[in-house]
Length: 272
Image (cartoon, rainbow, N blue to C red; front, side, top):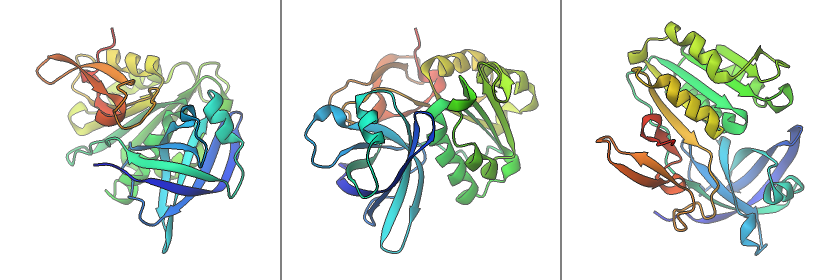
């Protein structure tokens, strides 16, 4: 089903950490409620440069009486996001979405584990918020493993502390939390969790998700991964974000991250 393009008004666009920005956008009330894991394509309204349309995960969403608002957490990684970071209050942007599929939420899982790297915290924060408010899961049932290279790259921690009881922060240089990879921290704690009762959700750099895939290989843990991939259109038309997968029967194939994902069963993804 085609999604409309909405004109959004920027309510705020602030640098919350070095090169990390939190943008709040006001939208018409006709904008659909996004599901956890979905994303939007954003560009400056009226600008015809096609390379400035960028995919950004939805970090938070709220609905008012006559409008709704959405928070977008993003990092400056190139020309497009650098221009977005320069937008001021009342600027207009074009929002296409919400796009993509969402995380599956099994009713039989009593323990939820989130594993995020860097900006991967964005879709997982929306999911944690959804599980807390809509599924009524308790803080005690949700554990969050958050990793980044340095303390300066840890964002969104305050929001997480309101949603999850057990939060493990890891940095490569030890400047905040444990020193080391976030996947190592989870691997050390794996025995604490009952695989049949646990659901794992992850989002972050490809190397992190690949390492987690290896750690979970042979285990009975279920894990869904939201993939970070370059997208040109966001709707699957350009096939520029295709990844190799194996279906449940083991047959090889390709899926488009934007249209068929961005969420996949981690065991479906072919890394080599």
